[in-house]
Image (cartoon, rainbow, N blue to C red; front, side):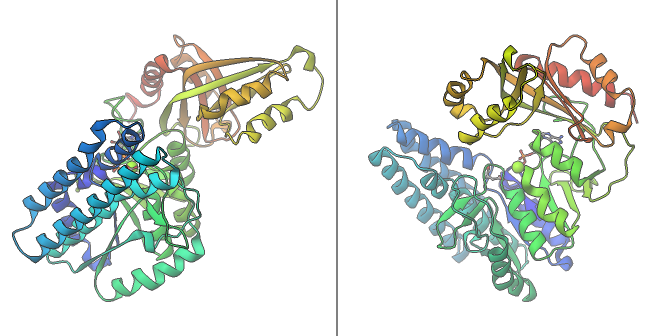
Amino acid sequence: MKFGGTSVGSAERIRSAANRVLERRSRKPVVVTSAVAGITDLLIRGAKLSLKHETEAGAIPDQILNRHRALVSEMFPAGAVKDRLLAHIQGVVAELRTLYMGVHYLEELTPRSLDAISAMGERLSCELVAATLEQQGIPAVAIDARTVVVTDETFGRAHPLVRETEERVRARLLPAVEAGKVPVLGGFIAGTRDGVTTTLGRGGSDWSAALVGALLPAEEIQIWTDVDGMLTVDPRTVKSARLIPEISFDEAAELAYFGAKVLHPATIKPAVEKLIPVLILNSMNPSAKGTRITADAPGEVGEPRAIAFKRGITVVIISQPRMLMAYGFVARVFEAFESHRTPVDLIATSEVSVSLTVDDPERLAAIQQDLVELGEVQVLRPMAIVSVIGRGFNRKPGLAGRIFQALHEVNIVMISFGASDVNVSLVVAEADAERAVRAVHETFFEGRR
Ligand code: ADP
Ligand code: ASP
Ligand code: MG
């Protein structure tokens, strides 16, 4: 059972999360928790401010201290548990101050230091959640996830080492479960073989939960969040978004990858491999059925299941009329991206030009320098990718027509259709994205039952 930041965002929510665990006690749950809502952002902001010598940075450890202290005071009566929790919070925050100071004086914030800093939210929340469970009569034990989830050393977006993690899950989690306890781990945080703190990337708690769930192995992985499940579109953009009761792994992964924040993109993989169903549930509305993600969810072939979108995209267009009928052009274009380790997402080509999108424009200037050798380079931004997700798209006549009809008033910059039969993606200017998403949603989901 994984609880996201808002699901542990207040005393009331933490208690209600504990109730969800209590209800399922006979199923021997293992709990994975995110940091308290907003804390990871705050930790990272403080690190960046320390680097820039901004005095505001000094206030952030206090904010984090006060927020957690207030939760503890609201939830626990005077006594040993409260004292232990307060001492833990004090200890972690003292460490945070030292790290901020280090960043300040060294004038350096490496991905490794940032991981040590951003991991603190989950180090705090897992103790709090475990103590709440105990308070409600559920024997629980907080386990430092950095000693369970083992990763490589790609700080900031580390990759789990499955074999090592499996051994630790066997050695540390299973005995606790067998002894009738509920282990509580922070999501998102992990450690290298040598015990250096790493993180799985923002939103990575889902991944921790799916990985641990797959390795136990669990009979089910429950992701408890602040919406009723996976919806046909982000409800923050389109109010009339609808619940998707059941969705296939492929579709869910595609949806996650193309921007639906409800699930971290890598989440699905460990569960898919072991055929463990993943449920998305609402901790604020526990009686709702949620979304069930399974290997082969039923659904109408060719009917879109959901719409996702991603802002902040850059489009690069390389044109070279002399390349007409020549070979090797596309290979050289990709070499430029590869040598600067920048992933390319969507691609469209014609005889004399290649258009592609990148998510991370950090190395774009260097890439552009390489590309001008190949032809004329045009860069468009900020753009957005709007993706229509479903399956069997290449077996359904008229689908593209309906999408284009919905977008007849929007300027489409790029199209990717047919690379997979589960996704049609379009690139539009960022300023047009919400309008495009609403129009496509209306066409496919509103008025349909
Ligand atoms: P948590 O803290 O529980 O991990 P997140 O904020 O990471 O929660 O993810 C939940 C949010 O994802 C929702 O509040 C919603 O705004 C957003 N979201 C984006 N696309 C979708 C979608 N298709 N279905 C449901 N939620 C979505
Ligand atoms: N707390 C981490 C974040 O905000 C991980 C997560 O919540 O999934 O990114
Ligand atoms: Mg999340």
